[in-house]
Image (cartoon, rainbow, N blue to C red; front, side, top):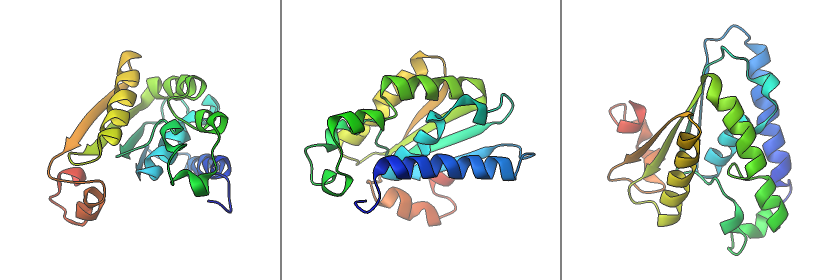
Length: 169
């Protein structure tokens, strides 16, 4: 962004998942992780048509300190390169009712969410993680919410080079 619209990036991520899924049809499952904006993109993988999520394909998603509702970004400098409107922010948010319906539909089969946030993330990241977790949990999806102690928004990923770090376990 701004050279490419966020909607195109979401499409590319969804297409990449489809490519990998069809390239390796006999896999035992997928683990998908993303941090911050990457957590948003990882989650949006699940917001595509169900024919790409066969019943027996286990998928585990690990959104770390994610953004699940893009609307709060509209009045921040983060939106300068994103160029989102209220309409596009809703359309591209995992918590938008139409996206959530598809995510729920795809997740309730064999997928699960392990939603992770840093203890010292801003309250907005805590709230987004908690709210998305509660939505999934209320619908019966297999989901867990984990807070990683003594971490902030950036070192939660930086510490991942340590094999004994909680996120790696």
